[in-house]
Image (cartoon, rainbow, N blue to C red; front, top):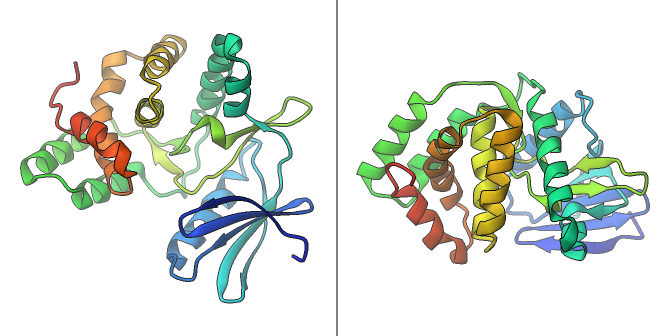
Length: 249
């Protein structure tokens, strides 16, 4: 790892390229358990036929944990959408089809989505009544075991030169109800100021999957509460609004 090129930086982690390797390096105070869980998620999903970068090694360099993966050379779906707004419908259809292909898989050793949501709701800065309502709603929702990405964002989809879509960043992957993951994508568009696109996406997904929009909407307060725990300051007002909606309208 002598020719590292910093390509991306987030709080507590840095992403480097070194030839055909991608190096995700974490700050010393980052949870070791979370790092190893992320690597394990990726390794489990590698056993499917989805196109994802494969882990090469997990190392400690100068006291910092690092996950070494294949570097995927290509363009993110978000970049394509930004450069070609006239192709919005084409890209949105591609996005939904790819997401539905993820849901078809079962990865039974992944953590359960319901357990993650219950823990997040308990940790959220919400009053006891709201937390109780959200826990109760979550408990009543149908329990599925589909593979869910947890952060199915167009920035996490890389299209290679031959048109192959690679899905990256499986740190939030769980097994659970796919409609909850759709609600997460809907909120992703919404908190980024793209509410029109969020509603367009939701209608398209529900049409393609023959899912009632109302069913996905019942997941939105649950997912919003789970996102509150690590939300950016500019997201919180919108997320609080969603968590306080008893029945989405």
